[in-house]
Image 1 (cartoon, rainbow, N blue to C red):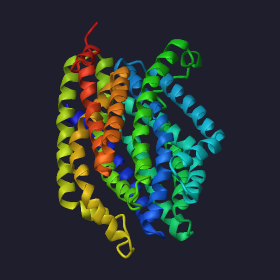
Image 2: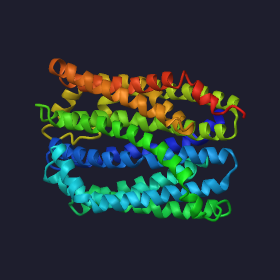
Image 3: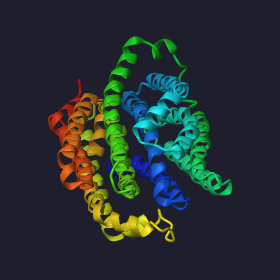
Length: 439
């Protein structure tokens, strides 16, 4: 079972490592371009807006993964093919809608996030990458459901390598600054779509059946697809609200350097989250597979071992952040910049939250993967609504007294409560295990 977990987790971890690396490079470019605090802040606002868009579309990956894994476990390759067709059809429609609505979407987002002209330039350059990014959600969800972590790994590494290379080239070679990072995203995302199509054809051309559009658009499976995705959309919207609020609240604090500090510290948390997500993806794929195969014993063994791996990774990151947080943050900054010392000094006051949060976040990430694989999306939705309500209650109740610490405390407890609520709402996992019982 450990080999099965690692077979899926390790490629996802390798590909996920390139994602925060891309964020680190982007933040470093901003930190070395003009006024560090202002440029990092403008980039953070732009990235937060696109996180809002992408995360609200990520239901396509999660909904596709769980249903495809269950069809794979049951040996129904016709339904696997239909799931791919459904996912890509919905992705294309959503991507086109974002492009059509880009102006009202952009202006409203910039107003809410208190964005400036630099953030505006970044937004209208990067918006053209969104359709490709959403299509990649469909591909990656399907590949994960098919128990294939290698193709998403190759695609992700390629996308992020192209993004990093083009970001440096456009930003410094053409003197475009953070707008160059936005155009690099456009090039990288479409490269990923092309590569996914090629790898799909090479690996699965003998497995895929003819697409039965009548079955793809049949009301009952389509209703199930959207019912599951409805819950995931609500759950994801809560995540987006919390993360976007984090950046917006940071931008509105009296200390102008606070946004840059919180952005960099959040990057450290992101590094951990992408590492731990590798085991969440493994739990997602294997949970769906064992439920589809009605193999309760293997499911229990998988869940137990995934928890051991997830908390081991959390402990590792706690040690890394205790020992080397200052050196890691130093990568984001130009040591010669006038405000780099002030940024690091202020970060020292809040880094304790980044040290604590891996332990609080290990459980919810893994529980998300299990619930997606088991298609227990109502549990995900309800637990997220409660955790989000708790987050805002904690922040607004304590912010007048402890300032920025209230933002980090609310975020940390929000993470912890997500996992706790899911565990108890699933009747201590009994509802998940019941899905794998023989009928």
